[in-house]
Length: 289
Image 1 (cartoon, rainbow, N blue to C red):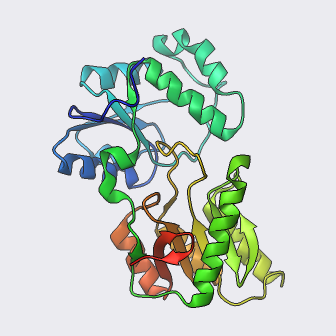
Image 2 (cartoon, rainbow, N blue to C red; image 1 turned 90 degrees about the vertical axis):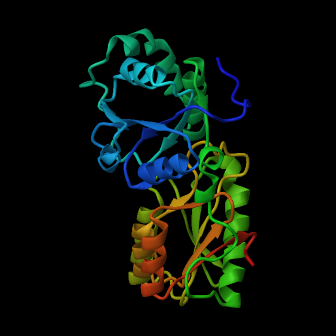
């Protein structure tokens, strides 16, 4: 097992790529630092990442092939990036020889809540000789800094809602809930569960239609869980999030500075500006400089 505390670099970075544009953005940011990247793309998920010249597709069950692919190219630092929208069909899965050897370990990983599963999965990857890194380690420039990202500014009531959302999510963090909440004028109206942020925003739309949320405005708050392993599942928003916020008739988005990502930052900021939504990063509900 490698030592995860060992500093990153300077060899190639292996990117296990899921869906969305974020894997390509991370690859570009890593390459801008002078390091090479290799992408192990999950079949059916990482379509956009296939545009990279060092990308190769692996189906669920081809664990051995993915390990050999990154090892042969000298990648010891590995980062997991992108979304997974479909759970693997274990009955239809065709395991390669490497996966068969690891079946007992894989089965042990799959037992427990989301956080415990992630922790055991990372430990399994490290047992293969890799160092699991976070985006903050290999591409720190992608994390949002304190301040206003677009043209719109929050009102004092918005910042008060953001502070309440940050506090509520911080208190719920030990219970393995999501990373997002919606607060409208001092009232927490939605907490992200297993459905994800976009579906949570759809619930807010339905609550408004049903007359259960009558307050005008409100804020989507995104933050990491206290004590969360930030090598995986960094809180992330994108253009689809902005569309959901607009549909839910909120005033804007508040992000935890230094611990959240904005995928397709230029396009997402443009979408927020077009919808007249504020997009702010800070800590504890305070507006950044």
